[in-house]
Image 1 (tube, rainbow, N blue to C red):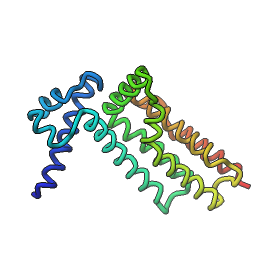
Image 2: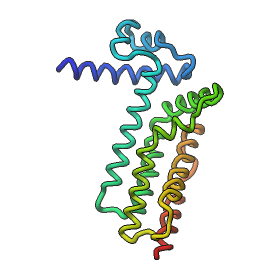
Image 3: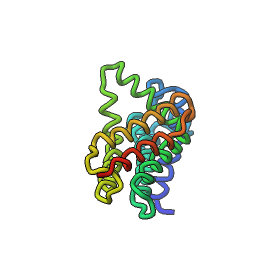
Image 4: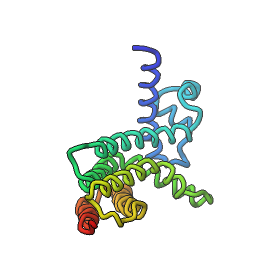
Length: 200
């Protein structure tokens, strides 16, 4: 195994164990030392992989978002689904992945609340991390309009924001309550069919 592959594998292991520390301690009380101890290494060795706690946390989020975006793109590029089916499938898949990653999301929520308390802008942080997902939703809606599946009169921006808001509400429920308390498929299907019913 090459040194680069071994290094990357070790980074992944550190991120997995660091997530445990973030979940137990919360973002604020997690320290570089606690992460090193959880990994069974010294702080000096941990510095080989990451510069600080913030970088580790950002890497955990980036890894999660990359996985999510990859799955979203697979659905968006599928040729065997209508645009409405793609939107519904993306919503269901996002909630399913978020249920599996609810530990990370609970830490993210804790971090965002602390950021807001400290005078930061949590909305800007979330928007920056979800911008690609929003663009993909917009692309699917544009595609649906071009194919005549959706009305030409609908606003792409408003419609994508509405779909995103439904997904965001379901993810929030997963994070706070530990599981999705609503079937997201039905509201998404209803919204998608409304778009289709209003075709010009």
